[in-house]
Image 1 (cartoon, one colour):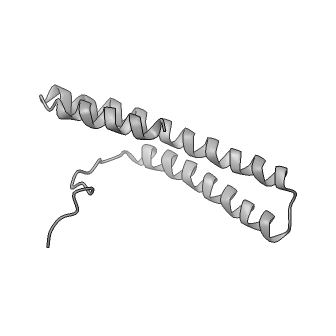
Image 2: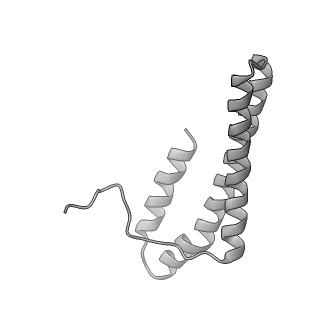
Length: 100
Protein backbone atom coordinates (compact mmCIF):
# COMPACT_ATOMS: atom_id res chain seq x y z
CA UNK A 1 0.00 0.00 0.00
CA UNK A 2 1.37 3.40 -0.99
CA UNK A 3 1.92 5.93 1.78
CA UNK A 4 0.13 9.26 1.61
CA UNK A 5 2.74 11.97 0.81
CA UNK A 6 1.06 14.35 3.27
CA UNK A 7 1.23 12.01 6.26
CA UNK A 8 4.24 11.66 8.47
CA UNK A 9 5.70 8.67 10.21
CA UNK A 10 7.31 11.01 12.71
CA UNK A 11 5.99 11.12 16.24
CA UNK A 12 6.57 13.39 19.20
CA UNK A 13 6.66 11.90 22.66
CA UNK A 14 5.12 14.41 25.02
CA UNK A 15 5.28 14.58 28.76
CA UNK A 16 2.08 13.94 30.66
CA UNK A 17 2.03 17.64 31.58
CA UNK A 18 2.30 18.69 27.91
CA UNK A 19 -0.50 16.31 26.92
CA UNK A 20 -2.67 17.49 29.79
CA UNK A 21 -2.21 21.16 28.87
CA UNK A 22 -2.83 20.66 25.15
CA UNK A 23 -5.89 18.46 25.71
CA UNK A 24 -7.28 20.96 28.22
CA UNK A 25 -7.02 23.71 25.61
CA UNK A 26 -8.72 21.56 22.96
CA UNK A 27 -11.50 20.49 25.29
CA UNK A 28 -12.16 24.11 26.19
CA UNK A 29 -12.55 24.96 22.51
CA UNK A 30 -14.72 21.88 22.01
CA UNK A 31 -17.00 23.02 24.84
CA UNK A 32 -17.24 26.48 23.32
CA UNK A 33 -18.23 24.96 19.98
CA UNK A 34 -20.94 22.90 21.67
CA UNK A 35 -22.13 26.12 23.25
CA UNK A 36 -22.33 27.73 19.82
CA UNK A 37 -24.37 24.78 18.55
CA UNK A 38 -26.79 25.30 21.45
CA UNK A 39 -26.96 29.00 20.67
CA UNK A 40 -27.93 28.22 17.07
CA UNK A 41 -30.54 25.70 18.20
CA UNK A 42 -31.97 28.27 20.64
CA UNK A 43 -32.06 31.08 18.06
CA UNK A 44 -29.48 33.24 19.86
CA UNK A 45 -28.76 36.75 18.62
CA UNK A 46 -26.13 36.81 15.83
CA UNK A 47 -23.63 39.13 17.58
CA UNK A 48 -23.71 36.86 20.65
CA UNK A 49 -22.89 33.86 18.47
CA UNK A 50 -20.15 35.75 16.66
CA UNK A 51 -18.59 36.70 20.00
CA UNK A 52 -18.46 33.02 20.94
CA UNK A 53 -16.96 32.10 17.56
CA UNK A 54 -14.30 34.71 18.20
CA UNK A 55 -13.59 33.10 21.58
CA UNK A 56 -13.17 29.68 19.92
CA UNK A 57 -10.82 31.17 17.34
CA UNK A 58 -8.75 32.73 20.14
CA UNK A 59 -8.68 29.41 22.01
CA UNK A 60 -7.46 27.54 18.93
CA UNK A 61 -4.88 30.24 18.21
CA UNK A 62 -3.64 29.86 21.77
CA UNK A 63 -3.43 26.10 21.26
CA UNK A 64 -1.44 26.62 18.04
CA UNK A 65 0.99 28.99 19.76
CA UNK A 66 1.63 26.51 22.57
CA UNK A 67 2.08 23.56 20.21
CA UNK A 68 4.31 25.56 17.86
CA UNK A 69 6.52 26.70 20.75
CA UNK A 70 6.85 23.11 21.92
CA UNK A 71 7.67 21.98 18.38
CA UNK A 72 10.39 24.61 17.98
CA UNK A 73 11.91 23.94 21.41
CA UNK A 74 12.06 20.20 20.90
CA UNK A 75 11.64 18.75 17.40
CA UNK A 76 13.19 21.58 15.39
CA UNK A 77 16.02 22.17 17.86
CA UNK A 78 16.86 18.45 18.01
CA UNK A 79 16.83 18.17 14.21
CA UNK A 80 19.11 21.18 13.74
CA UNK A 81 21.55 19.83 16.33
CA UNK A 82 21.52 16.52 14.43
CA UNK A 83 22.31 18.35 11.18
CA UNK A 84 18.83 17.92 9.70
CA UNK A 85 18.46 21.44 8.35
CA UNK A 86 15.42 20.44 6.26
CA UNK A 87 13.48 21.01 9.47
CA UNK A 88 13.99 24.73 8.94
CA UNK A 89 12.24 24.53 5.57
CA UNK A 90 9.46 22.48 7.15
CA UNK A 91 9.07 25.11 9.89
CA UNK A 92 8.97 27.94 7.34
CA UNK A 93 6.21 26.15 5.38
CA UNK A 94 4.31 25.52 8.59
CA UNK A 95 4.54 29.18 9.59
CA UNK A 96 3.31 30.24 6.16
CA UNK A 97 0.25 27.98 6.57
CA UNK A 98 -0.45 29.27 10.06
CA UNK A 99 -0.19 32.91 9.02
CA UNK A 100 -2.77 32.78 6.22
